[in-house]
Length: 404
Image (cartoon, rainbow, N blue to C red):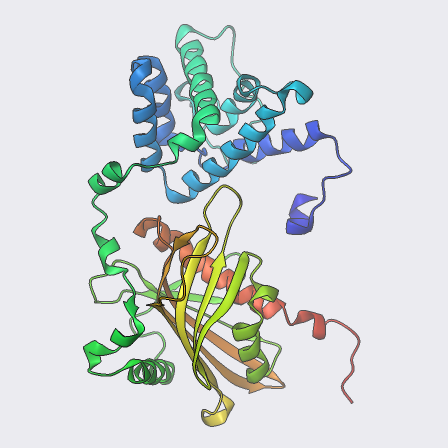
């Protein structure tokens, strides 16, 4: 049911125990444990050998070593479990009981290697098959895993608040490259103003589209939607983030698609929380601010961009150019984190029969994530956005034929 209904699934008609078992099974069958196969051993060792008073700092350091996607999923799960535990007078699920139930699904145990060699095996490892009475090592690991998860549930808010001193020690030098400039300074490196900068970006985008699209680009497989093409290339400006390119066909003419991207983001971006026009600079140029968010307690991400668009190009093509700027009338919304749009370029071209082909070049520093996350995940997120834009037009084509 979860595989066929996806995001539209409704659990209202099911027992809470069945849904809880499904959650445990999901985490148990992940190819990599949520706390990762490598770092599970470290988490367990902390609660076996490290003095109690030093454990919070040790755990926080290991949390920083988790891959970004694991850490964000863990923070979301812990916040939910803490909420469940706060209602233990009614549901009998204290933080300790939750740790007993979920630790086997979230940790990778060294003593399970001989029994479960592949977490993604077609045989569900919902129960670890042990032979005979567990030895002292197994008992020690199990207790440490329970104590660790109990600590994570109870202290998750403090553990996920990193001090400025610790952040400084991490030496994220590339963060200095992701600083937006004021509108008045945009284009100064080209000895231009913001108008000249936008014109140069539009010209470069059209040149990129005319030239061999495979030159310098590395194609990436997109198993989630093979109708959306993905590729990336490195940009030689010293910033570690790749430039991603995604493209697909849409059942809509260019001007409708342009309007959908510019004015109707709420239709295709379910993570959009708030948006507003900050300043109208010209007929087709504006400073625009928007905030997106995931599940609580992850912070919202706020973006303030200068964006321009054109729909008067040869052959009916349209272009959108976006880049982050600082603006005094655009404070960060919803108490979030200010992300940086290093580059966002849309090219929309007609391809016959009322259809368009849309290409999006994207390079965005969402803040708080490592270059490894961008290399593995960001391109797929950009492709998902393009899929949602395309699918937002499907209601007009899936119904009865209305054309004469």
